Length: 484
Image (cartoon, rainbow, N blue to C red; front, side, top):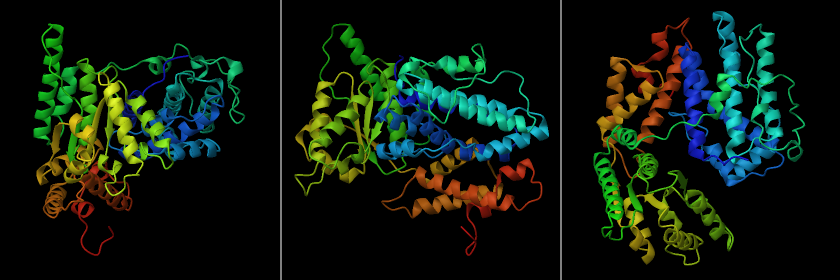
């Protein structure tokens, strides 16, 4: 039995494999279709994998892994425990994704092997989901093989032959056969396993952890946040020197590393928290460096005594890393002393003391509401004494974020489209209120522009590569009366 994987490890490996396969797709329209559909398809497959493991029940780890299945630039899921457990219980059968038909059609036309390569990548990904709890059972392996066989059968029907044996899940089984009965809908395959396949080796590889220099470069690469970057670097330097002083037997005054992030939504708080967790791990402050993100719903239950258990569970997952509590002010209702959120705060404070050497808590939210929250309990005020302020992005920075989204997703702004985006983002910034979403507003604008562009390009006969990529003014900011 192996060690369970962290959600961040699953996300890292998943995003690397998906990005690598995406680069193999030459056609922009096909690449776009794949990118839009693959995350949702893979999350559904994960539910099937876990249903096939009859010896295991759904745990908070499964929920974390489910929420880690997303590609950079795509929506990040935030499913709750009951949603994942219900999805596993209600999973009925494997269905090939819509884009797989497009891959086969492209292969037939261009004599490529994208579809069969995807079948191998699917096997790798499903094995990754199966191994998240540290084991791959016979039932899970049988399900993985059945999914791969279903795709390969479609390839055979289309006359798409492979140049090497398909990757099979059997060599990765790590639980004794008698302890994991096979899933009835997924009969085992009799095909020999490709133990020396490069894809099989890829499944066992773990990417190297980023160095301190790489993490600092990633921090510098974030859009805006100039003051936050300075604060992070200063904090990292402070912690490094404290460790050196301790190693030199010099006095090290007490210092709390717990942080308060203040600012509006979409200003990069979660991104910076994730980087800080890795930075602390890189300099030896945290043993693992994972980020566990929760809000009130992840800590507070609706029954007496259950909140303490739920909060303790979240803390246990975060030990060795950072517990990031978004909208932390929602934990405490100042008008109700009996609110269960107060119990969550007490459990947090105790664990912050018990695990002060290997747990950092970051609370985040609107500036005014967070001040009320921190003043609600003397323990909070004493432990949270470092504040990072996340300012709204200005119009120019919002435009930089928009350009970055275009570049990452294979779109190009026409000169007129650029002007339209600049004007619209300037207007959004100047008219912003307390509900302004910053980068989230930019993402909404980008997704709407892509949808409008798709509707426009779909009307063209044999659109060129440039037309498939180009965003025009009417895609960015349609005239009044036009469909939004």
